[in-house]
Length: 446
Image (cartoon, rainbow, N blue to C red):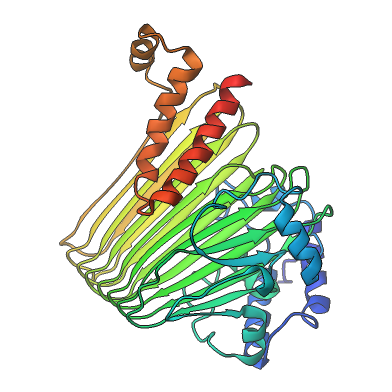
């Protein structure tokens, strides 16, 4: 019997053709070159994910990704500084401009030291491109997420740059570390940044990401952040997706959690045409606490997918997941969450909830929460709700003098606010509340 040759899309063919030329210029020592080759081989064998791949059932990337764009070049220091400071070519200003934070700026997938400023005891920040060439500090690279995922494989094959952050044992970072990812230029390009964070035993840090680019430019981003959390560490992670309105954005967060670690992560989605955020969390010690949440404000024909995989691989773990979607017009929201409890993971406590409000008859929400439990002494549950605004409550507010747009905005702000309340830093929470109010105001006056 002859081998079956899969039919590839133009984008898949272009990606396969681009790798041999790109790998000559991409940074990496012999180990990294082997890692890239292995990742590319996985992608070549599987291709872009589509609806018959269970984890991508509701986000058909093979159909959505019609072209494979050329890799973005690094801007020179002067151009990067001028563009990043002006913000004139971006879809929105810097949501965290007033935040007192250590700043790390990544433009078109490349670290820009001249725009960055980190001066905290116990914290080191290095250029990932240099680390890939020397091999320094990247032992954990590629170990904290599912290697067989096509989006992760593409990032591993084409990763250009980013940063390696090390938080020393026992360090308590005085201010948040703010990673600002900016896409510059008028030509659509593909960008593959990567961030590797190692948090030492007993250390505490707040990490903030903001991603943005220009409207009307169909650029493609595929970003990966890996966080290795040491025993008894405390980590708060917040991500704002404010990419341009024509962008396709894939993002993955992988974390390995040590004994008694506490990890909170929140993803806030607003603007891109298509966004998929994946979370892969592994419990590698006992008495771990994990809290993963998300909020999405969608309109037009946006598509936003939140997918997570939580692996309770040790006893006495606790996980909480809460995702909120507000969907207007013809937009589509997706939530896929899987909690896996391994046979050894007795005394696991896992709770997962997805809630969506549909503001239009054409709005769509897909929910697929899952539990796979192989232990017998656990307390796990999941749920999903999907519906319109409460007519009785809306009537109550309007009867007290509030116009309908203001009454709806008040109810929607309270709905999203339940997810935002999980953010411990007041300035960060208030900045995202302001983003929510701006979205609601724009909807009220349209």
